[in-house]
Length: 420
Image 1 (cartoon, rainbow, N blue to C red):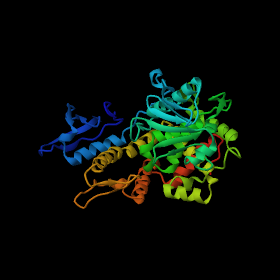
Image 2 (image 1 turned 120 degrees about the horizontal axis):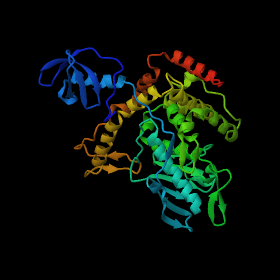
Image 3 (image 1 turned 135 degrees about the vertical axis):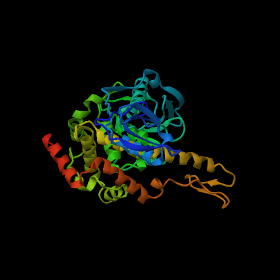
Image 4 (image 1 turned 60 degrees about the vertical axis):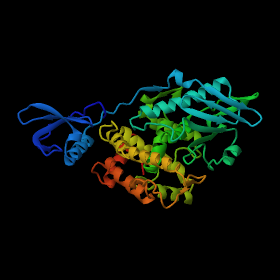
């Protein structure tokens, strides 16, 4: 809550504080902004102290206190990209190579066909609107390209080209995190050829585009979130009404109905049977991959139920104000600086004399050098799984998994939706 003091709903008791030089005093905390604590003395006098001047134990007390405070969650009504951001620059148009490269403020996208000006503006503003959406939602994503100046995308003219470029079977689009690249075939977004250029057809839709762009905006988070959160948040964003480069976020609460209608029209078999909640909530990313490897058809069920879980924590849990989900994202995001600092040190290390970097990013180095240490939370798949399990406790909020599943089913039953 930088810059804004968290307000305490009830008075905290007087306690002893210790300064780093050893001096002690009695006071109760009234507010803390992450840097400075506001205090009330035994006689009612007011004062403040910079957290860095306190003992380690007191600094930890302040950090724990801040985590307990209610978060003011603000959901915007409408999110629109600024007009200046959606101006599309033509970088290159090479008809002989079927390569057309365009840029907006935050994106560089390559197409296998020349877009009409109308389609170019539409795609550009939808890309930029998705960027603004991920900035505005209370997940504290902080979207930025993992490397380079732009988020990168490729739009392929047909499914054969999409598959040849590395697209996944039975997918409408994909974000390849290793290459930091979003790919989608024209047919998935409703684009047709008109003369020598491509334009929107009657089936133009944004769900697949927004879904995969959400993964791209959340690149940092993909290793630290359970797969149901990764896919559920992407579906949540993808179902929001997007018209003329504006997301109507106020429609999120009716999104469950809109999502069901989307599935009826776009998914073979219509709305799928929900995946068992008890299996999905604690699932590790490795287990998710194993399920899909054994039965690829389970993906529709898992995506649908992932959306249901995200919808529950955004609109149905507690007071329906996304308190726990917002707190959860803040806790997961707390490792971001540590990981980014490591990546900066690693980038410097790879440039040292004697370090040989492979095409896939791996490297070899002489014994005289010591590479930076990978943060423990990402050191192994087991460590990432343990971190995911630990942070899920925030969503449980003292409830057993069984009790939470009962509450989720009850909430959806009231909406006329069956949850397994």
